[in-house]
Image (cartoon, rainbow, N blue to C red):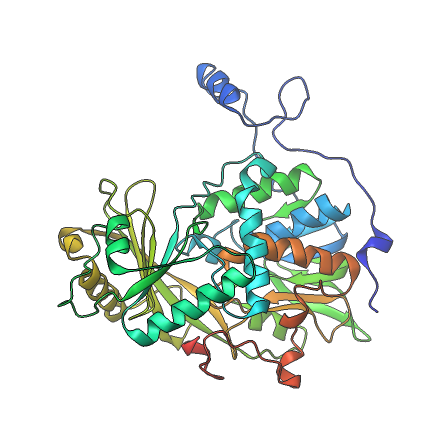
Amino acid sequence: MRESCRNRRTIRPAKRCAVDQSGEMKTYSAFSLLQNALTRNRNWSPAWQDVEPKRTYDVIVIGGGGHGLATAYYLARNHGINRVAVLEKGWLGGGNTGRNTTIVRSDYLLEENSRLYEFSLKLWEGLSEELNFNVMYSPRGVFRLAHNDAQLCQMAALGNAMSQRGIAAELLTPPQIREIEPALDCSANTRWPVAGGLLQRRGGTVRHDAVAWGYARAADRLGVDIVQNCEVTGIRTTNGRVTGVDTNRGRIDAGNVAIVVAGHTSQVAAMAGIELPIESHLLQAFVTEPVKPVLNTVMIAGAYDGYVSQTDKGEIVMGAELDMYPSYSQRGNLPRIEDIARYTLTLFPSFKRLRMMRCWAGINDMTMDGSPIIGITPVQGLFINGGWCYGGFKSTTGSGYLFADTLANGRPHDILEPFSLERFDSGRYLDEVGTGPIPHLH
């Protein structure tokens, strides 16, 4: 059993987060917003402080995205471990946290995945109240469309599996879908006729930037050090145990180090001599100019693995499959944008006159079975949270909560145990879609 953080923690008082002139902790409310609007915003202080790193911590979290910040927050809140540093090479939320399509759901077939993502979805439902920060969780519903009898049977099997686990799901007919989404082309002569669909009403969207900001503010409030522009250049080990990291701002010692760097997990793990079964691929998305409300749910099309939703500002968000070649560039290619636009217009012909406003690409760490790697590593004191494939953002809450428990107790949480790195040696793969060891197909 590896040594637990719990045995060496030192509790520090809450600090630094948005205090007013009286020295009392600031909370966000309608009253405080009105009060500060009338005073021209003179009393607001930074939501979190970007501090200089100390020489020693109990835990270093490499990566200042949603997963890393959530891990630090739950370490402090649930386990009283606040001698924690979150090291981010750029700015908070500048990686995949700010480069996704904001969808949250728990409609998974495998029981292991279902437990993890349902745990996360339940946390999403109360996160704004917990953090005192509006993360804009919108349970507008997530539709998975079937375009033939085979896909409809798959949707029925998925819905039955969800229902047996107490997760509500509805299998709807084309007329019922048309009532909910009038803009969707449900005619019989379209390229991909709609045979039916599975609806999870609790699924929806969350504002991705707000997730990073809310967790950062809450973690800072509990004493966590958040260090931006601090790139980890090496992981130091002695006799098979991690002792700290080297950064562009100097050496930092810690008894436990957590790698939480979506898109670059294999690169950072290599600093400790660990080779991971991961390929990194680009995943593109883009948004149109804002229009009046036209979409009521999130639509996922089984014909091309595409997804369409509308933001609160009115923009239509579109995305689809990976670019199918390994890359770390965070830039997509024009052919994939054309594919996504063409596919989307097949289902929503009324979008044809909308203008595209911006596009982006995130770096997806694709594992060989399509499921994440989260837990302990062969290096004592070194933990890993990565390889989330398409599922990273929706799992932010549950991942942070459960990974913090793993760090605090030195062993995987029960829900995370199936996602260990060792499963690739033992053959206990978690292949949700059954495509085999081909990363870009998951």
